[in-house]
Length: 334
Image (tube, rainbow, N blue to C red; front, side):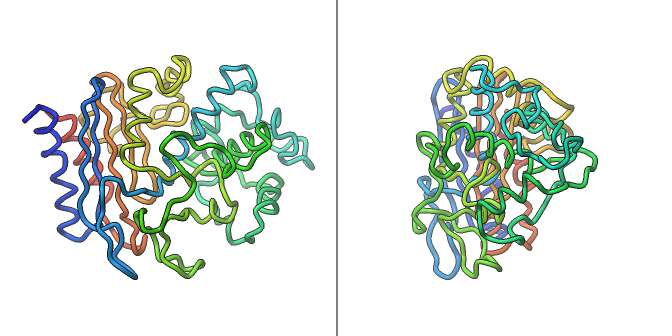
C-alpha cells in the first residue's frame, strides 16, 4: 500500500463515520498529489427522497460557492492580467449604472479587489429571490438598490457583481459561458447528488442549482457550478502544478488581502475549514451544499470533500464544520 493510500484510508474514516451516523446522506473524498497520484472514493447515498440512489465517484455535485474560486475568480484575475480591468478601480469602470442615481453612493467606490477579498460593506445574506423571478429585473434591482452599509463580511453580493462584469464584457449570461472542462451549469438529475426539498420551488432539487438567488437570476458569479470530484481535483492540480492559470493569477490567489482571505480564497486561521494542521501555504474554500476544496502548495497536496449535507433539508446539524476539519487534519497530519 502506498503512502497516499494509507493517508487516504485515515482521512476517509471521518466521512464514513458521518454517513454511518446518518449525519449526512453521502459524500466523495478525493486527494491528489503534485506528482499526479490520486485516490477518489465515495460512500452513502446520492439521494434519499423521493427515491433512493447510491453515491458514486462520478456523481455530479452542486458546488455552490466553489463557483467563486473555480469560475469567477480565475476569470476576473485573467482580465486584470490582460489589462481589461484594474483590480483597484471601482466596479463602475465596467458597471457605470451601479447606483447611477446617486453619484456619491458608497457602492460606486467599491473596487474589484475589495469584492474578491470580501472587504465591502455589502450584507452577508440577502434574499434577492423573494423580490421576483424575472432575472433581468433582479439584476437591475441589485444594481440600483441602496444597500445599507455595515462592517465587511463574507458576502455573495461581491461575486454577484463580479459576475455582472463578466456578463457585460462577454455579452453573454453566465449560463451561456463555457464553465470549463469537466464542469457544467446543471446536471442530469439521476447523475447528481440531491440537495434540498425546496420550500418555494416545491420539489427535491437534483441537477439544478440549490442557491435561491442564483436560481432566480438564472445564473450568477457566486454559485451554480456543477462538477465531479475528478473535475474539481483536475482544476486544483492545475493550480498546484502552475498550468491551470498564469503565475501572476496563482500568486494573487495566494496573496493575503486580510488575515483570513486572499483574492477569492480563504487562508488558514484558527477554526478554519481545512483543519489546524495545514501549512501556511494552503488556500481553500467551501460551499453551502456541503462541498469544499483545499490546496496545500507547500506540501504539494490538494483534497476535495463533496457531500450532500443539506439533503433533504438545511435545517439539521450535519456536523459539516467538524467533519471538514477532521478530514483536513488527517490529510495533513501524517
